[in-house]
Length: 467
Image (cartoon, rainbow, N blue to C red; front, side, top):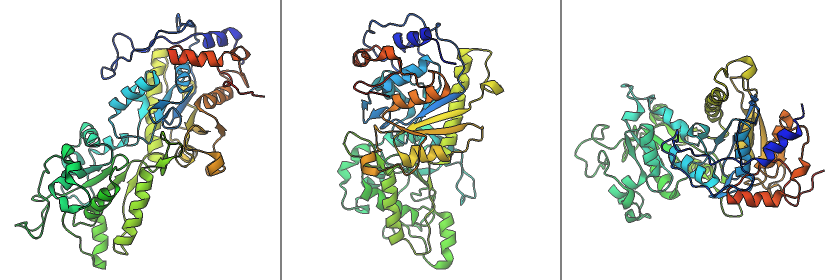
């Protein structure tokens, strides 16, 4: 049913109140001061019908909502409009390198939109669930949280602190190792890493100086390797990963036997290796996409193929979009976030009722190889259908890349147009509604958005003519 004009006018004329109340339910989110609202101020939210949507959105961040630290035009307007309509959404990014609470606080500030932590998943968020796992070669079945792991990537020791916040108790980073043994990679100055280094839990085995044979109890042993974020020193990290993965049982400074009959056993004893983001490219301030963690993975695989024994395969796990495990993790979060939102909307509502189940999720992203591929391929165990929307505001450049390798349902200019298209399909704004009354005010409304007001009318961008 086409919504009434009064509904559309209310939606397009009302602006949101400051989104932080005096008593915030998320104490780690410090209040973000907002500019005074424009003349189109919101008096109440009760006039919006409590209609329960059976669809939701998942948004990438870089190239969809932000370009580096700069908000993409109309991204804030889009999120606030969805919040007003009580349509659930999550942010699903292959970025990382900070704890989720820090990143949510930062995003809330940059976008001037309250982002609840329950609606945010970054590339390494699922790593938190691995603290209770054990390694296949460990007869003691000691949880990984109690063992020494190597974490690489990111600035300084931020990723170490994230891993510790997840529950890992013995976390080593490359700065610790290069500071303790500078000759491990002679082309890196230990002074560049000293500020972030900590003493190693055990010394590194050295056949020339160690008094005893290599032992997990007496020498530094890495039981698992996690690439949390894009490595900053590819050469150092490549050398260090090779040393660990080709070692005897993860004991740094040793070399595993290379005879053919030992290869299967050594492959089984290799410390597990996890990558959090397969993206080759990402959208930054530069006018062309930059290499990402996926490029480091491709580089390391090339080095491994050239250095490792011919019959020694590399075991590794990659999460992040487009992996099905990441989309499954995200859907679980989305369902929980939606369930809470339904309870807030109506205490008698239940997301398990047939009429309230999530029917469709629109994945909006800028990368065909992660957002679109992952969304297209995902098969929900909950019966939800995932549909994909590709935006031109990030990595994807049709003129340079040609048609997307993985076909989305639609290609649009930005996130605003993507959500507008989806809402039209769902009948929430009427089929093809452009809101004639919004024409001629778009430039004024965008200025209001920058001043702290908000635009909630769906219509064409300034200078666009839509047939």
